[in-house]
View 1 (cartoon, rainbow, N blue to C red):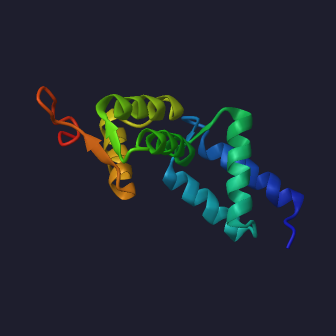
View 2 (view 1 turned 90 degrees about the vertical axis):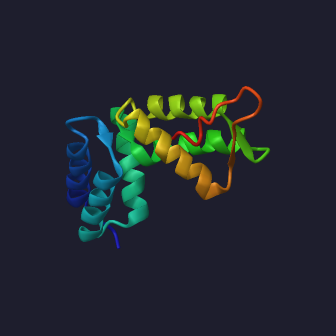
Length: 137
């Protein structure tokens, strides 16, 4: 079913409004946008496409995309199944830059740690002069 141009234009304006104050679309805002899209007959896939299109045009940050970039980096870093402190810190920096600093650093580290646990990636820590950097998160 095709959505009228008027509804689609209103939806685009709604997306822009959600990120108006901070130029950032967090997961709750994204969910709200998707719900409004569904109510207006716009599929989830089309809504996600429009969110990314608007974000790209207006320089907005979509939290999900920022996290995906960090996950891709961690996946590469964990090619041997483990991530060291330097690689983890680089992922934190990548997420911080991708999210334009909208996520507090402690929360970023928690999210990345959970991402590692969910994917079965281990942390390289300890050793003779090592620290328990991962356990401290």
